Image (cartoon, rainbow, N blue to C red; front, side):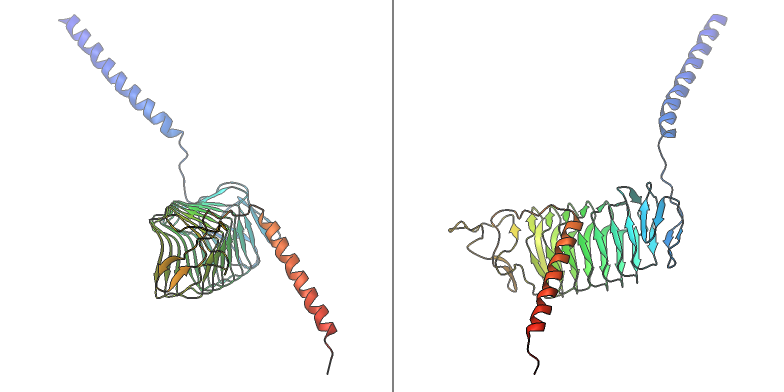
Length: 317
């Protein structure tokens, strides 16, 4: 009898030991997982000071990330450059990543933004630049409202519900990769006189959705494998630059003279058509943003010089 009880106790001990060992094998790896904890909201105050983190280094008006940050940033100062230096700004899915509200002439670049309600919000702010960022897995990647003369270029905007939303005028959206956004790639709502060019708009729900806005110029974009390339509502826009338009996957026109332009227009609706659809995908030039700015500066300087020269030669009556 004692031998039987001894065997039973040994088996009971062994089964408990195996159970504890199994739990230990599960808990140890979990203890090594980095748990993301949100910090307090970070502010770049109007006086230039930084509150809420020690992972953003200030040098004059340039604010450079020195590590990943798990929170949102509110900018209250003009003329700020936020350089992510390749690091990540991550949220909890509820807050906005970076908010530029009533501030002008700011730049956000080289930053990865993920898991926010909206990655970057530009509201009531003009002349800002959003450059070379990776904006993924947010509800909305980028939102520009009541803001003018902003530039969004060289960004990778993917796997969001919405890509870019504009509710304003005179902005430039160029050279971006906008892909795999489940709702729309670009949404314009009451937004006119925007320039949208040189973007890869691929594998989105709607490529571009345009509601109650006119006079946008949209050309040199690649619309590829979107569920619906374009949706319009009470809007008349320009879809070419009078010589070249966009590339549309699914366009079945011909090119009899082999000039790279379709012989027939790509019809969007009764008010919108691309008169010069491209037969092959538009090749977006790859060069650093500073090169583009330098080229624009050279062109502007030359134009001013020519204007002054003509002004001097004009006789005074």
